[in-house]
Image 1: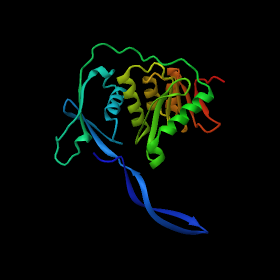
Image 2: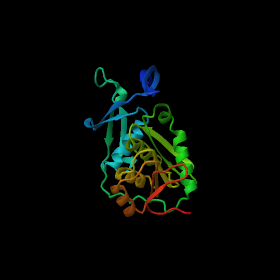
Image 3: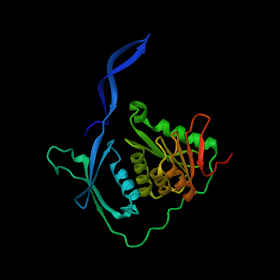
Image 4: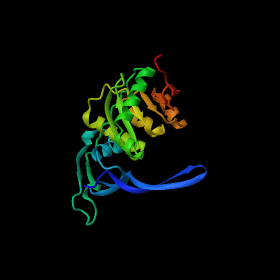
Length: 244
């Protein structure tokens, strides 16, 4: 299996005394790989992602896209070993899905309000666990946390949505995340991020990035607190309330 990162020669340019200079050194660069997803052996989509936690990613993606409503619908998720010559078998996964007739029960989100201290604690833990982000500055991280800011699960991937899918996949397959309150992400807060957070049962979404109007509207409708532009001692409240 390929490594997640590689050492690559990179030219770095800098200006000193009004003169541009540059130097070459080995840098840690993220390896992205395409994952082909098949449902009942039929191609469904291809995702450019960071390898690892693929089953979680697929569960979360299919849930957010409305293809499944529970982890029990996925009867099989396996890599297509040796299915195509010259293709890494760990980059093709076939999913078998069991149809469901009954409508799913609405997702119950937490009703707890968080303090600024709890919000800051959760985001600090998110960044602390984002090893690939620190090494490469090329990934986004997402995680769910308890009301005290304690980490429940953190995942990384190429995009904020993919990292969120992995987190949602963990929550779906574990089914014991009733204490999840805070959904934290390093990415822009859009409507998809709010939807993923709601499906995880979280009542608060936190990011150092801002929120867009569709996310704010959806957060108001879902009763979710939306906190963006989080800094060391500042944040913006786009929807909901905090406990001061």
